Image (tube, rainbow, N blue to C red):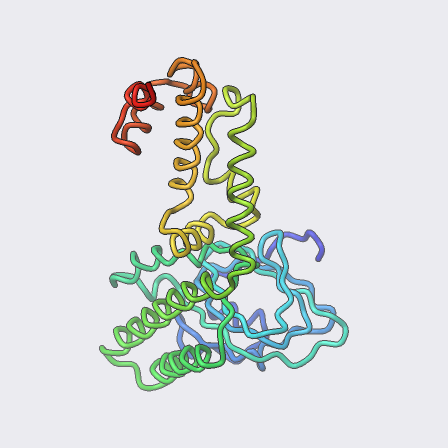
Amino acid sequence: MPNSKPYRIKSISDYHKVRGLPKAEHPLISVVNLESDKPRKRDHESFILNFYSISIKRAWNIKYHYGQQEYDFNDGVMFFMAPGQVFGIEAADNVVHPSGWVLLIHPDFLWNTPLAKAIKKYEFFDYSVNEALFVSEKEEKIIDGIIRNIQNEYKSNIDKYSQGIIISQIETLLNYAERFYQRQFITRNISNHRILDSLEKLLNDYFENEDLIAKGLPTVQYISDHLNVSQGYLRGLLKVLTGQNTQQHIHEKLISKAKEKLSTTDLSVSEIAYALGFEHPQSFSKLFKTKTQLSPLEFRQSFS
């Protein structure tokens, strides 16, 4: 896809115009049937949306781009975009008819409702495209039913109850998505266990490095970058499979290495702290005691 500057779409009405769709029936929320939003032959476009997008897509002979990544949607998958993310389309010559839908939600629709703040807790809006949600046929029917409820509500006569009813349907949709992601973390065990194995090797290699004084402690960003997963997806995966988040895994490996050095070497506590990447030995001692209920010296003395 060419490196052209993405086109910013500020409103849902503009989205309908740009994609050649019928006029939006509501200015702040819309369900787009992807049979209508067909990519054109040799369609190469990229956009930045000023609103939320939730969708299920399947059977597209095209590639979707999110940031620097791309994904072929040949199966039913569900994914989520927050305002400000880059969205692109690259169609092939032999484009097939798409199926699925896109739910567009402008932030103004959520204004002055609890969901305006609560929506930020759903971390899958920050997941990478290769971390999309694969839904079963049964799960997809549940989601499709919620989407129909939303669509029927905003297409009917709008009254003082309409926004509240739609908001509750969106919350239900997001809660189901969160449940289905928990299922995916468990059932897609081959790829997820590979991530766990890679995490273990990455941390082992990192703490075996002789240059930790210069490198410092590994960060969550460093871990996610090297595992090629987003921070949110990694945190959610680890929490489900191990009960610990990424930072806790880093600390667990760190304490394990510290115990090894305290019990098998004559290095001082300060030397061990520096060797493990701590700038200040006091920070190391504080973390060690928090995790073990013993100071480093007390732990060492337990072996004498």
